Length: 263
Image (tube, rainbow, N blue to C red; front, side):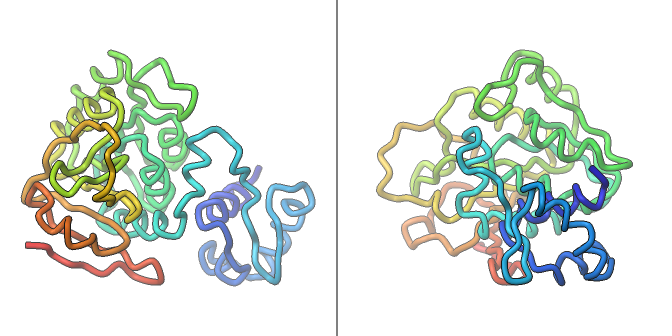
C-alpha cells in the first residue's frame, strides 16, 4: 500500500466520511489525483464512494476497541484535533489506550519528531511509522480486546521516562468523584503516566458525563491547576464542581476548538 493510500485510508476511517475535495486539500494534491488513487481502493472494498465522498468500510463488528472507535466519532475527532493543536513538534508525550486516545494518535501524525511512550499497540503502530518519531511500546503481553499492555514491563518502561504531556482518557465522569475507569490496571497506568508528565490532558467525550451512573468504578488521579480537560460539550451543571483545578477546553465539533477556562 502506498503512503497516499495509507493516508487516505487513515483519514476516511478517522472521519467516517470525507469528500474528494477535502482529501485533495489534506494531501495537497489535485482532486483528479485523489480520484485516481482511490479508484482501486473502492474496487477492492477498502473504501466506499457515495455522492462525491469516500465512506469508511471499517467493520463495527471488529474487536471491541475498533468498535468503540466508531462511537461518537465526530466528537472524538474534534477532541483529537483540539489536543493535537496543543502538542508541538518535538514534544515528548505519554498516551493511554482509550479509543479517544486512538483518534488523538491519528491526529498527531501531522506532528514531527515526537517522542511517544504508550501501552497501546494501536497507538504505537500509528505513530511509529512517521519519520522522525521515537516510539516506545510499554509492555510485552497485550490484552486481546484492545491490544493494551498492563504487565510489569509496561509500568517499568513508563517509570523510566519523562514527558511534557500525558494524554489520558476515562470510562466515565462522576460529578463528585471525577474521572473514573473500570479496571484497577487502567487506574494504575493513568497514575504512572501522570507521574512522569509536566502536564496532563484529559480527553473525554461528552457522553461520559453521566451524573446518574451507578456503575462501580475507580478514580483516576485528580487533575492539577496546569492540567487541561478537553471535551466536545460544556458539561451539565452538576459537573461544575468537578474535583480538580484543571482548565476546560470545549472542542467545536463543527469547526475550530473554542477555549473556555473554567477557573
